Image (cartoon, rainbow over all chains, first blue to last red; front, side, top):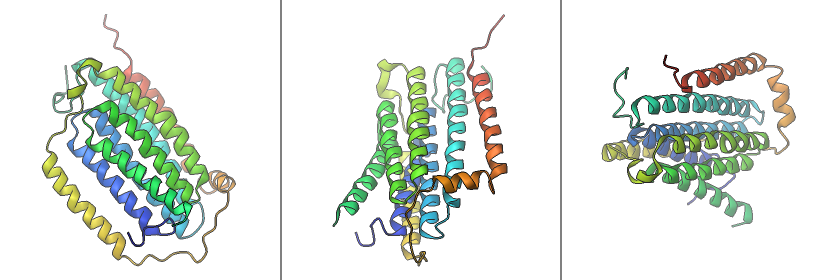
Length: 106
Length: 166
């Protein structure tokens, strides 16, 4: 594939786009709440690839990497709270199928 | 093709292949474990981009933290015996069409845009620079991040603890 090498910005952007789309597909099609969270993690990772790639190929300063670290931090917080919610839902409904969980009370 | 290009191809292949497994595997345990490949592959890409600190953070937090958390949640919530039905997917064909169009547009945009690159690309350790930035121009976001983490910690404990019914 021409133009796909470690020295090309577009190769990183294409990998990021593929990972983003697969994450989007996971979020759209999965019915298991944990799988949906996995898709969100993939999407955040693809955004991070773009941040670090632009930072590396444009200015050379570390601002993009700082943003990537903030995104990683927020992803950790999101995973902790999201999985806690999933566990709470499982305790109440005994399933984590997002189609079965459609009421706000037990 | 020299060695670093070959390794780059391998890393890209691992990343995309693992992401494919996450999206299409029928068993949620396989999905969770292929997330390891995706996160590791992204860390490899960071190494290629000269971001050593971000790569280490990626390995520590994603592989060492979030992945373990997800595996715990998988083990705690589904009955191991009925593995087959745990990772159902619905509405796959419309979603495939929509995301197919979307990826086509994204890749075309990336390929057609004339990217302006920096004249010289430098590889040097970034940890000291990142530390300086965190305690200088990004001090307020840094402190807010610790507040967010504290709130997330307390919130996770409050949400997931068992209700005590009297």
